[in-house]
Length: 234
Image 1 (tube, helix red, strand yellow):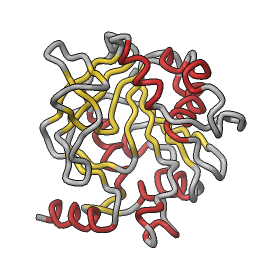
Image 2 (cartoon, rainbow, N blue to C red; image 1 turned 135 degrees about the vertical axis):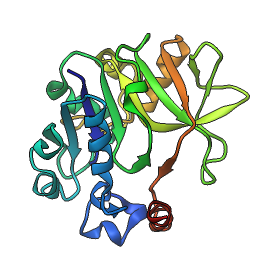
Image 3 (tube, helix red, strand yellow; image 1 turned 180 degrees about the horizontal axis):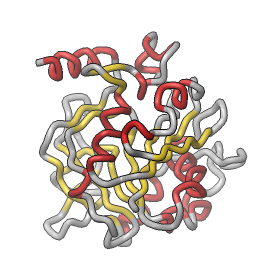
């Protein structure tokens, strides 16, 4: 049984004032909350168990989504406290609920038409990242994908990380050695970003990837939300 993690703990500061009273993943677009698009696609791909990271206005998630049964899912909530733990800390905090098998992780503030069945069940390395063409607001991209499907931190042709990937828990096993004593790591639970761990693994050729050429939107501002709404309403 495949498991999935949805990052939904962010403060949504760039989306204010819409996020003053509603968490960004619960903002409606195309007639339903943004996060529901993910839940439906995950369920369609055979995922039955989803962990949702929460922080900002956390109580709204179980109130809106319940236990997930309406989508044939079982939803568990991983509360991060009043200060979000960033992607690395959030994933580490959720690991006890996710188990030891590789899991899909999705940013709760994106929209895409990806078919999750195209993602590998077992990454060849520590993680498999889904990359997309660079959007207008991020023209220089994040990483490079070679012909063998290995992701590199540097390269002539760069793509943008979609916020979707498949991860092994081992990626976080030695997080302290990579992150060190950066601000936030002294907290309990610790707060840190995932990207440094990915870059360290990339240096060892341990991150694979694929290029998603479908529709994808980083719903980071009210303007992009309105644009996505117009596209979905067609």
